[in-house]
Length: 403
Ligand code: HAM
Image 1 (tube, rainbow, N blue to C red):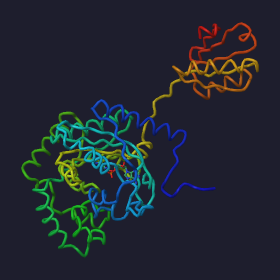
Image 2 (image 1 turned 90 degrees about the vertical axis):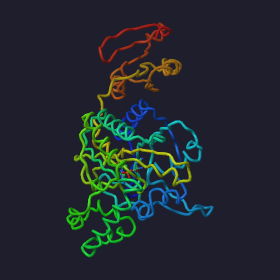
Image 3 (image 1 turned 60 degrees about the horizontal axis):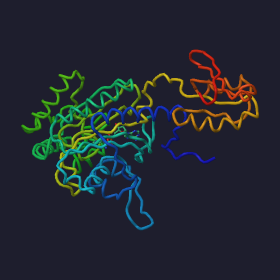
Image 4 (image 1 turned 45 degrees about the vertical axis):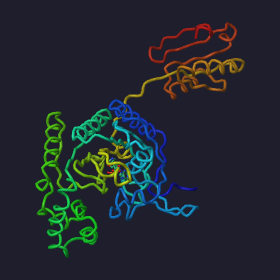
């Protein structure tokens, strides 16, 4: 029997219902905030992710599903959604339009990571990207929207925020950090030694215990922010305080992708094990220009659908539609027209073979139908149909034309 690949999963039955419920809830709420659907290809030029997510990130340096296609092009299965949306935004010349643009998307992402609970090689994200709004008010609004999505799904979370500064305050901070890290170079892990040269702030979220204990005394970014970044961060915390959205400031939150500046955030759950981030995002004001577009401020996030599937509280499923069957072979043919007609407005479970009343009742229960609708010898002779409301247990017989 052929198995799915390691780190990849089929979604069936209960899981697929959870998946659809999460997507539908997120789509509904994102639409209320003015987001419209965007679909971009799963396969992109590898250069797109190298330039946006960053050459030095784990995602690009270790985890890409990268290969040469039959035409000799260096291509890659998307490891995340933002880069593709920004490429599409620039490609459609939306960066030349004065209006603000907001997009949502959902679909599979691919990262060749070591699979474990909550960490897959093919996983699904729901994400939003908002272009053209430079204000920190938009960062707050996005955080509010994610909180509302989690509230609607019955999920508790811990919100962690940080500021990653800008091109004015980040480089001098990096310099300070490099000086600090270099003094303890030998004690840091191999990965961190590499990061000192390639991207020193990534050292801050190293999971190695020795590195973490050394980093307790590392210089913090927030006191080094320039006036504008500091004021934005204060405004963000003030808005969150006012809205009573609880948060923690985590000065070591740097995110695994290189395109962020200023606001960075993660939503974490402590009920799903080590892979606890259920959503992450932030501001990326330089990425559009970096991908050859006109400078456009932007902010966005993505949530991990599989991780949320572990937590979601499903609403009670309601009985819906009709179960349609016959207790006499001669009545079977007459059901097709009735099923087609009824399917214009409701869900119909149509049983094609003649069955006993008991079997039909079982079928109606299994399909969670609201009405059990049957035709037997008498109904066929009288041009009628028998209906039982399975919620109120009320029964009646009506003319087919009236049904
Ligand atoms: P990210 O933090 O890499 O951000 O991923 C977002 C979410 O995807 C994570 O919080 C997690 O729930 C889920 N996730 C990531 N990797 C895996 C995995 N291997 N298995 C299962 N779930 C996973 C981004 O991807 C950014 N594009 C978010 C963003 C949008 N920033 C701005 N706009």
